[in-house]
Image (cartoon, rainbow, N blue to C red; front, side, top):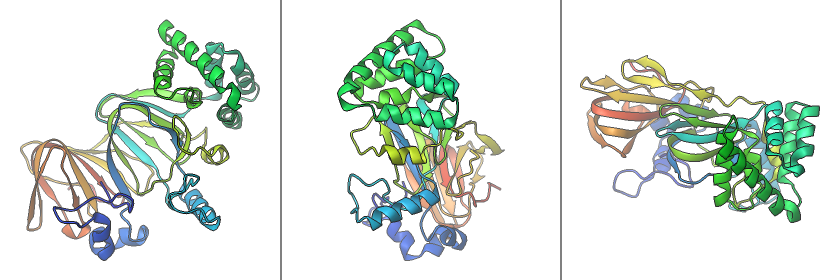
Length: 363
């Protein structure tokens, strides 16, 4: 749900798309401040993500990195859609994932000492030198170097290494203990991504299972993979993804290591209550903010004054802006423009509302 040119949302029953609507009058749809700040572009995308199998391990660039990388690849003459491209646009892609069900993630890199301990527990001979490297220089640079060593493992020796690690993970998962969950996840993922070095890279990341209602924020440089579960993903309006494994797509290890920051914090967040029935998640991303709205019998003024996208998660709600009224049922979504002004809602429903950080909390 959004206005990215590669897959913009349709509007109503005609053939209009949200990106075309905004391009026709950015100040009306986004508001003058938002239009100026983000170059006339809706700055966020809202997705429903349901992972039955692990998605690729990946990292996203900062704004400066995206602008530079996009310019460099354009100067090299790489055409749009070229599989060797790392940068498909010049935007950053911070993300927030809000769990609707228990949601298993690998998010942020382990402390180097902890990563070395897990490699030792695996008792795979080929990994002993990597564990020793982490123990000898327990800093973020060593951890990045170990990640690079894993991803650049010689082709001829990859099947043997992955098979040994998967067998070790199955053993540790069955034995229980502090690494059982991470090892069980790696063993399960290996069945869907046979021979993929990403299974080993996954073990260098922190493993967690979000409870429904929790969220994880992925800033630039935060290596991560979504393993399984259903949730709401709110992100900046970009498709820039640099992958590290669990994929058949292009992997550029040098560029990955240039972007990945082993020391970056990847926090698990709880919602902050703003008013009766309204909560939100605090992140430093200027492009978006996620609100949760729980409607009971009373009508409620919704958060936000700029462009907003609403998704009905449960029940049904009636929205009112000026003279306009819209019924929103479970699974349906809508766009509320800056020109629509304040929006009120009633009914019995739970809504996810995406807005920019410049939006005003509910009154």
